Image (cartoon, rainbow, N blue to C red):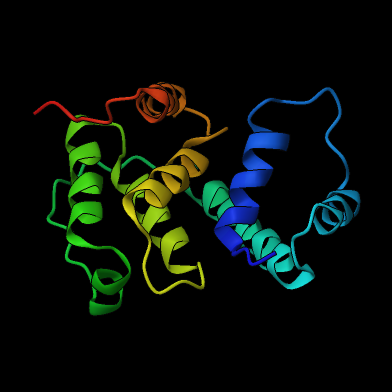
Length: 158
């Protein structure tokens, strides 16, 4: 099975985090279950490192309020990983208040933490949903993004 870290993360999110099972397995059991499901140990390890990075970011970002409307300038590496549509999508979400500057930076950091050359718009949506998930004070943003993700039309109204 040729899967990448994002596939493992989406599998975890859909099967263990999002549906809130009655009992979440401990990390070791969860890793074993992922390997048994066909994911490579290397990709599972990378996914858990990615989640740990997100947890650390979320702890650091709690209670931080930024109202800055400064223009975000992307590095060449970020521009390579995030195409123009993806950067525009991030900007639209920030303009609408779905992402604040702290969460925007968390999203960009988590995109850059993936070992892929590019992240398409669909993958970016999943990353944003994972970043917003279970963050205090971001419930409305998560609900908006969740509705947007599962709406068949995927269009932002300007």
